[in-house]
Amino acid sequence: MKTVEFYFDLSSPWTHLAFHNIQPIIEDNSAKIIWKPFLVGGVFNAVNQDVYAARENPDNRKFVHSFRVLKDWAKLAGVPMNFPSEHHPVKSVHAMRLCCALEDDQEALHQFATAAFNAYYGEQRNLDDPAVLIAIANELGMDGEVLAARTQEQEIKDRLRANTEEAIARGSYGSPSIFVPFGDGERMYFGNDQLPLVNWAIKQA
Figure 1 (cartoon, rainbow, N blue to C red):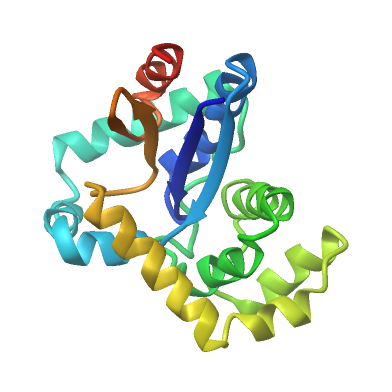
Figure 2 (tube, helix red, strand yellow):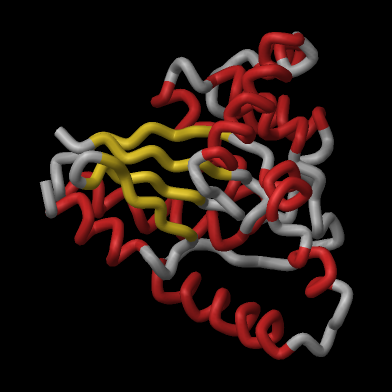
């Protein structure tokens, strides 16, 4: 069975799309996916600071076009994209630490990430607010207070840092970064647009 690793940050709208769209690909190929929370800001700071400079230019043609295409992709995928909101760009460190607290329970992590994506991109809730994160977890039947407390533990902080550094070492420059075993090594694919290549790479097994 092919195992795909999906490094993600909840603050990325393209990741919201890819998170949704990769799931039928995994199912159709009888593959396995491992959700890996990381901090995309840490990736940008380390290897892709050009992102910040590009954001400072509101007339940047690539960004204007990408935003329009983002909305089209969302309509095609049938996922909420009520974006941007007053919370954009959101600081995601609290949210991603909470994801790390759930990482060992992949099903729980998947449930929380799904709900958090919908909360941010559908309902415009602030994922930088610990109270919002607690509420999302509670709505899923989890113990939000316990999970929020775990985000302050050094073990969880270290895990988020380790996941981020691991993704960078493997070639990541943004979210989502998707790794597929390929031959004697692996292929990395980025974003929602490259999911057809993810599908192709899985089939090479």
